[in-house]
Length: 193
Image (cartoon, rainbow, N blue to C red; front, side, top):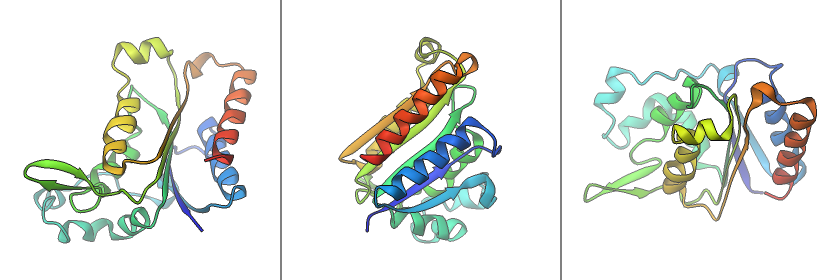
């Protein structure tokens, strides 16, 4: 059975992001995936890259020790689905910290001649499910960093066969109908993921 690692980053269980997370997990499970549900806040993931970790960042093998369990979960995944809100045109700190601390040399990439080479090529499917408080135009005007990070940086270290970036923009003014339609879209996408 194929395994999907779902990275969820939102501290409030009553949030719309939490409803999206529940939908992703339920629909992937229904579609036959073995889901590793990683709720970073509930698990108490520590997002701060320490001085010692930064100094040992390029010591492949030893760099994994502080986050070995998360590295093992990432390495066991055939798919990666990130569920998060966009705050201040970026990831929530806990998700950014996960990428800083777990997407390490020797884990997500390797350096060959000073160039980054993908190291998570066993991840065949990559998706992000997110919401933005502002409009798509506002996100575009600042370069839409979360979209670019997923579709360029995370994509590069995985090189998946399938990539989906599902975003609800203008969440601050979204009607109940718009939220319901987006939730339904996410459900359909996960069923065929």
